[in-house]
Image: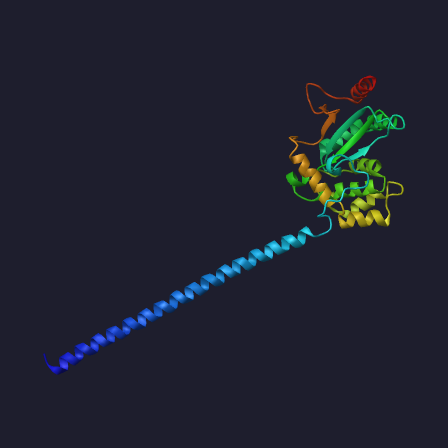
Length: 264
């Protein structure tokens, strides 16, 4: 083999070796950049998660996120608004009606329209106390926030000692189930103007700030875990008495049941 050919082959081997070294270096750089890119991507995702968690934390600090029961709320966790008076001083009403209601619920309006007068009569003579559990089931089913806002407004009315009157006004003016009219806080304040003495700066502030939103949400969550499936759910002395086709309830029948309980 000539010297020239040997040198040519050696040069070719050297060029091949140099090219392999360059390829290895380039591949190493790619792997390094890939690893850096992966780290950047992970950090970016982590930053996104951090922002989401931070926003959630900020939201939880907004007005209404804390559980602030309205004045005079009773029961476990003070989750119930009770209306009615004692039969005699120091003597509680002999019967208790627990009512689970949503101010957007058409069935609840039907119950209230039919039984309102009877409930008032029985409460006013001290035979019945009514315990209201406020629920937001329609917000979940139909979308919107009207159930929440109206329930908060009712709790604000309870603060002012005007719950029963405002409760009745909300049902008398209930919008169509598909319309989230009660999401409008100004509408709720306007309706308060029909209840003497309710539309005050304190009431307006309570409604606008959503002071009892957290309490309403907790009340509704309790309902969701109660085993009851719909509103209205009506219990007289612990027994379900409403919504059974084979045992329809009427105002007169309710009065007879309460009278029987009073007799013992």
